[in-house]
Every structure is written in C-alpha cells, then in structure tokens.
Image (cartoon, rainbow, N blue to C red; front, side, top):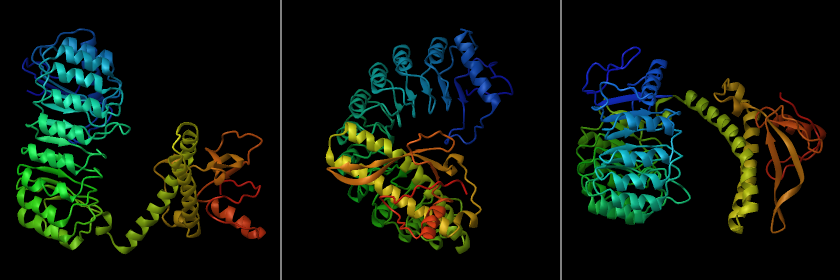
Amino acid sequence: MTSEIKENEIDTSNEGVTHLEFVGDRASDYDHELSVSGENITLLENFLESACNKQKTSYTSSLRSLKITHYSRLSDNKILCVLRSYPNITSLNFEQSKSFTDVSLIEIARSYPNLESLNVCGNQDITGHSIYKIAKSCQKIRHLDIGFCGNITDDFVYKIVEACSKLELLCIGGLKRCKPISDQTIVAIAHSCPNLRHLSLKGCHNITDVSVNRLLQHIHNLEYLELDQCRFITDSSICNIANSCPKLEHLDIGASDASDTTICNIVRSCKNLRYLDIRCCRLVTDIVIDEIAQHCSSLECLGIQLTNVSKDALSKLNPKIKIKWDSVLDIGPEKELNDLRVTLVNLVQYLWLTYANLEDIVQYCEDKIKDEHYQKSIVELERDMRGMAERFGLMVRMYGLKEKINYQPTNPELNTNYAITEFVPRDIKYRGKELSSHMKFQTPGVNSTEDCVKMIFSPLPTISLFANHHLQTKKSFRLGPPFTFSHICLGKK
C-alpha cells in the first residue's frame, strides 16, 4: 500500500507499507495532485535522517518502491543510507533530483539485483558507466528513464539496451549533444527490446527514417511513443506508425513534416489514442480535426500549436478534450496586436542577452576550433545577431511599445541596461577581412577601465538617444555592423 502523509509524519502504523513518495523543491510536471509544502520537505528530510541514523521502521522489510523527485540535496551519502536501511526495494524514482553521482548508482547495482525500475531523469552528474553496471547486474529491470542525463553518450546507451532484454519502458531523449543517439542504437533497441511498450526519443536529433522504420518493423506493442524534435524523421517513417502500433495511446510527433494523410491514417488505426501532439507540424490542416472528430472517441489531449488548424474546426471536437492551441486562435484583434507588441519587446531583450554571450563563443572558436568554415559561421552569427537586435530595439523605441503595453518584465535581469565596458579599436578578422566589432558587455555599476569607451547602452530606451544624438549633430548613423560610434556618454533614460 502507499504511505499516507499526515500533518507532521508518515503513517507507519501499517507494516505493509510498500511505497513512499516525496516531492522535494518543486512539484513535478506530471504529479499535479502533489503540492509542495514545507511539511512535505520536512517529511522527506526526516525520512532521510532516520535512514542515515540507522533507525529501523515498521516498513524496513516491506518497502518496495521509493520516489524522491525534484530534490536538489539528494547526496550520495543519503542514498547509500537508504540502501542500507531498505534492502528489498525494486523501484527507485529520482526524477529531477540532484547532487548524487555514479557512486550511488554503482552501489544500487550491487545492492539491488532484483531492481525492476529506475528513473534518474535530468541528472547531469551521472555517466553511462554506472547505468551500464546496473544493466549488467539487474537482469529484471523493465523500466529505465535516463532522459536528459547530459553525460550519458550513445556508445553506452547501445551497450545498455543490449544488456536489458526485458525493457518495457525506455526514455533516452535529450542525451549528450556531442555524441547523440545514433541509428545504430535505435536498431539495437529494435532487436534487443521486443517487449517495449513506452519509448521516448524526444530530441534525438540525429536518428533517421532508416532506424525508425526498423524499430516499427520489430516492435508492435508500443503504447507510448515520443519522436518530438527528431529533425530527420519524415513522413515516410511516420506513416508506418498506423500499421505497426495499433495499441498506441500516446503519440508525440511535434515539429515533424507529417502530412494530413499520415495523421488521419494514425487516427483511424489507433483506436486507443488518448494523447496526440502534432504541434509545429506545418502541413496539418482542418482535415485532421474532422478525422479526429469521427474516429478518435478516446482522445483526451490534443496539441496543435503552430499548425494550420482553424478555430472553427476545433468546435467539432468533444469539449472534454484538452486542447493546447495558439493563443491567437482565441483572441480579438486588439489583444492579438498587444500580444505581438509584448513578444517583440521580449525578443529584443533576449536577443541582446544572447548577443552578449556570443563573444565568448567567438573567442573559443578563434582559439580552439581549427575548422575555418565553422569559425567564420560563428563570427558572422555574432555580427548578424547584433544587427538584428539593433533594428528591433530601435523599432520598439520608435513606436513606444514599452509604454503602450505598460511593460513589466518578469525577469529583472533582462530589463537591465548593459554597459559597454570595452570597445576595442581592432575588429574581429577572418582571413584579413573585418567582420565584426568586438565588445564586452557588463551590467551597470561594474567599474570599467579608463581605456574603454564608457557608456550605458540599452537596446530599448537609450537607442533612441543614440539615434537622436546623430540626428541633432547631422552625423551619419546606421544600424547594423559595424557600429558608427561617437565618443558620447549615454545613461538610463
């Protein structure tokens, strides 16, 4: 039975407690019914403290499943204490919990040979080495979520899936970008994991139709499939989902080029479909909505942002379906215009923040990367980003957009003027050609060197002062690289 959480303690009166569940610093996106409170964190820390103090509980032997999510202080020492105190656990869920490393996982592999389920999603401190140890030692493992663990590479995932023939759930989305999931690994999944029911490949940018088609040929019991942001997956493999996955309940093919015909076939064939996400599928039209209305009686959630679906078509759907759509489908012209203004103002702020960080990338490319084509691309990106930010910034000021929308930034950092503390007379050069001015940005209040041009530069309020200065003095002023500077001092408006 699941533990009952009372006001200040866990109900331990029943010796048959098999599952404990805690949420740490913030609520999980998937567990909306669980509220994060000081009491809950206190309960969690009391539980961990009792384990570290080797205090026996009435459920020491009966506990089988432990879930501690979104807890940033789950150290190796705390996990090792739990392992010693609860020897019969078969399911561990540490989703989005941090501060533990391979040390914990290697000990889990040694202590829990009967482990069936492991979720370490979002941990950036573990590597494929420890997960492979678990795969080799825990032959009963059926559920494995290592999604968004940034230090697990493709070569380890290949070995892991070959060692886990009983897998029913596998999440490997968002792994290391420098060595991402390959077609070879997807083919290994197809041949090694015939019982797979839940597969998340979200953000596996390098896999292609070749491996996905092989996967669909061998695995026919999929109930959950995520191919979101798999940029090389095309309609030619997505169309095979209809025939290969009749039991499908959850499908995410966002940002793909899936056609109306393909999605309509999926809707007709997958009678149990409860969740369908086709956001950013630009080829999708009202035809899909008509098909869903006729054939998809079980659908509970539909994502259609940035598609060509109209608001009128959506009225045909069951009102109980939760629809994720573009806000512009449900607003009047006046609110739509205001939203566009807000979007533009935010875009300018983010552009300047991004540009401010590009300098480090440019310097890294000059010093480390020998590929001249890549070097040039990064330098040109810096130049283009600055030109775009300048143009948008001037547009915001010319039309008074901040004042018209009564702009109140949610992130103070993005509303802070940037100080140009260094304007080096040299230009960044590529093969002797000047490509971009070299600037360093800091927030106001930071002391700058005497050699630097000292000014406060804001993309929103002060760019007009910069423009007006040139207009008043009849000097040339042009937007875009390279800057035409006069030795002036600008402050916050």
